[in-house]
Image (cartoon, rainbow, N blue to C red; front, side):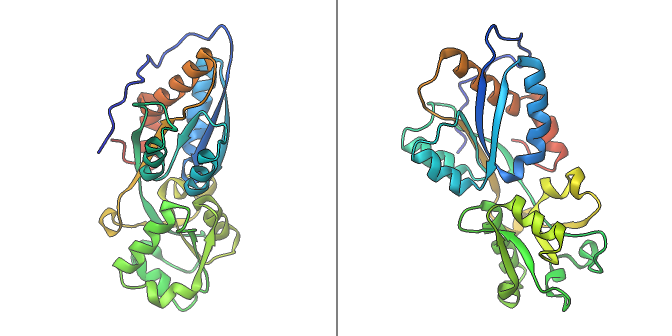
Length: 253
């Protein structure tokens, strides 16, 4: 169930009298989209975003233990909703901001052909290592396991799986030869740094929807810094953010 958004501000804002730092914790799948969104935000507002990327599960634990972030962009709505139940987010600020997709990805020099073989790529005799995000910490890892089971290949390839701490590290394994193939966020497969590779888009119904949740965290901060956090959140969910997210393959509610 989507929580109504209460923090609505105009996206076009004048430069503030006092520039603020906004500390943002974000799922690794948001790396490249956020680079673009942050560039616009900083240019239009004069504020600075201090971005930390990682696994949503790790961030949940850090925030629950008092990590001083202002905004949390999780790859799993459950983490922000769990923080909300613990009264650790600003009331009414929880929202699903994107729905992610998965892709089977290989390097450009690979002899594998995911575009035509699909999930059967994982069964190829030449595949020794398959990179995924750690399913204990990252929803993209859990969704990868679900998809492999849906296609009936998981049990045959389970001993070939190598886990990245997050989906970005799994992508690094696949890019650098640490794995022969990766099951990665589509947002990473579409990033410029990986655009030489080839991929197959896993059907959305092969796994539980990857509903990504966002919230402003409850903490002591100045009113100016609170306004900066709210403005950043609104840019992610507004026209600028929607355009960027859709270009990277996210579905935007």
